[in-house]
Amino acid sequence: MSDTDLWIDAKTAGDILRVSERQVNRRGNDGDLQTKRVGPRRILYLRSDVERLAADLQVVERPRSHVIPKREMVPMKDVLGTIERAQTELTKAREEVGYLRGQLDAQHKQLTDAEATRQQLVAAQARIAQLEQDLQGRTPWWKRLLGRS
Image (cartoon, rainbow, N blue to C red; front, side):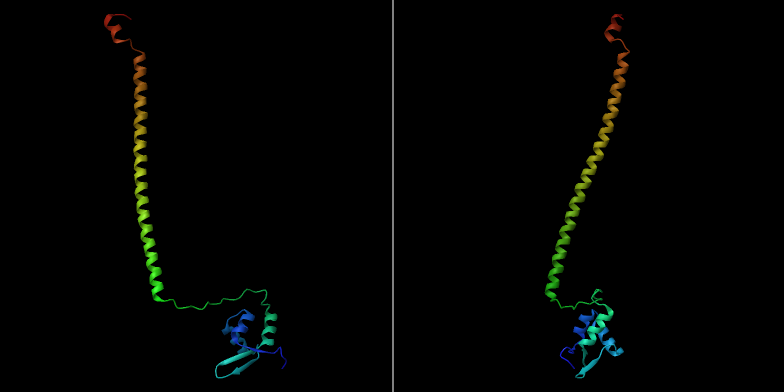
């Protein structure tokens, strides 16, 4: 065995092959990778075999397969604090939405009232025009009273 034939663990082999540790174990079980058992549970993989398989699979050109990030426990105090802040922000947002709805309703009412007033103005202007037209055809009352035409 030369110096380049080093034994690596499943995580390192997975990083090289861009697959999960479980998939590396399957490759070892299938005989694609030479394995060496160290202790009752730990299995090491021959680095040269892993690199050869990586070249055969062209892993440099492939993106890494699904890797599930490790989860860390967050203290309950931090979680509750975050929830309380979110609830406070939500309450403020609801209050602002209510205020804005009130403003919108008031403006809508003013717009409706303005439209009704505009219609009344148009009707009044039409009535004035009608009355002025009626007056143009008549002789003044004092001329009619005195008998002057």
